[in-house]
Image 1: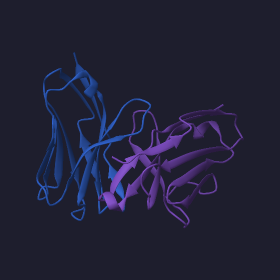
Image 2: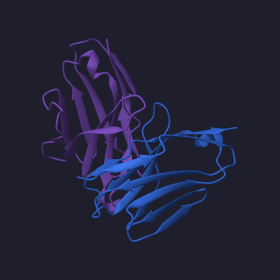
Image 3: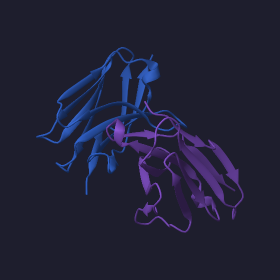
Image 4: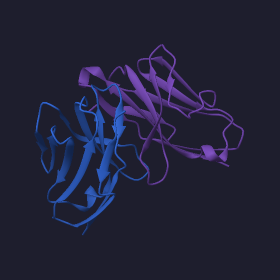
Length: 111
Length: 116
């Protein structure tokens, strides 16, 4: 089955700096890659996603890149703010039939 | 994005009692719903997948008689933890996928279960 690895497990950045979280996947059939933000005591919230026919997608301060050949995708957050502090999960899916999650990255933005 | 409502957000119960958690898709019909369990500072552990009108598919190691899942309609799925014990204490999260939205997965707000 699919195996998703996520790094780093924890990340601290100064406010205003950029944060990058990386994930790799094993199954070349995976074609949908969402990213979720989870705040303490809440359910994960979809923040951005990308499909295998696209190499990059951007939404304001958040961007995701995908390298199908290398089977890795990354989340980029620019101009980080304290409210970006949360746990971020990547996931890989084959057409939404099953979702495989990374182990999460705890991001702390230091004011 | 689509809205998934989960209730209750927090429940405390005595050992041996049963607890029901509801998960509703408010503005879309969910063809598939997933139930996850999450321990502190850990990732999401898939418990079962349910499709409307059919029996849920449980992941290996998840007791189907203990964690009863009912997906009676396209907008409602329930998880009942039967004869709860302290080791069942955890954060339970439901999610729903919508084919019409491109197989996106949306999560409920989670339920923190504490069994005394």
